[in-house]
Length: 361
Image 1 (cartoon, rainbow, N blue to C red):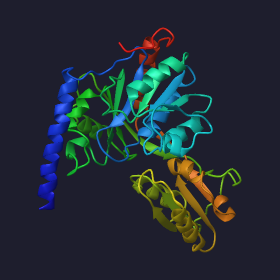
Image 2 (image 1 turned 180 degrees about the vertical axis):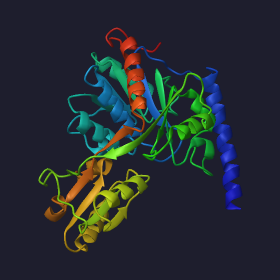
Image 3 (image 1 turned 90 degrees about the horizontal axis):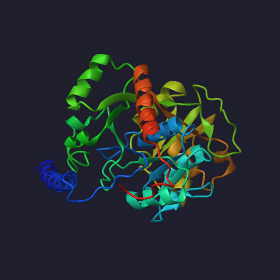
Image 4 (image 1 turned 135 degrees about the vertical axis):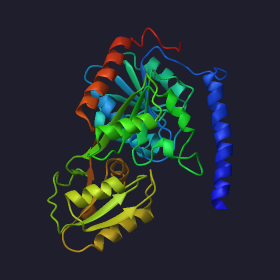
């Protein structure tokens, strides 16, 4: 009965989202296009597909040659409206992912948040006179903006053509929404994926002639300290007790990596995605870590680290808490080259001086 009810609710959800997309597709509801190049990174599903790491990849690709501004809605922040992030911005003000990017690209790229992407872009155009490229983080369903390049991320482990609409499945809209993408990136792929499987997935995705399909996974770097007074590279041996502390949607890839790379002696503390840590959580983390015997450390994610570093822990926790930096890796070398060339070619040919255009087309 529950399954039937969820399917019925999914039918209503399909009707609402289909009508909305129909109105945008037929220009009944206006979608804004800007003179400045706008690159959107997003997905069709709820849960993590790696939007922030892929956004960071694009920023890294462009930041040395262009001035880049990342615009996010600032999910779960406690503020509203347009805010330009700086080194003093807190997670409560701008959200954890924008804070992560602000720390990573300080002085090399700008980061701003605004729930209304049109207003956010207009503010960027007016205030960042020398900016050239805008990258939208998690904006695939934000149809008030027509991006110059629309990048859709699809989880290899749960492809959209095998999924269902909310609440029966995890799709935010019908899989037909893939047609809006200029680039489709299949994320979280195994290292051993074969070219023939690549072709099968692209075919099942009903790829259109103008769409490029690429395949990526994630690579972790050496652990880094969450707090500045800890050592940079902890010595981790097979007998080290690890408290794996996470507040992300899916921990499977991280768990497998930690077990394979460091130690199988893992105790996990899992919180919900974008979890806002409270005093009771600090107590639970401290109590769990204190209960581990022998040599021990805490490993967390890069996203969780920006939240945790704003909290007050005792010295034993501070000196033993590390995060794992994460970055995008293209499975096929030729994919990386083609993707980089595709993005660079577009922005080079379409870059503009914001001082000349501060309005929509």
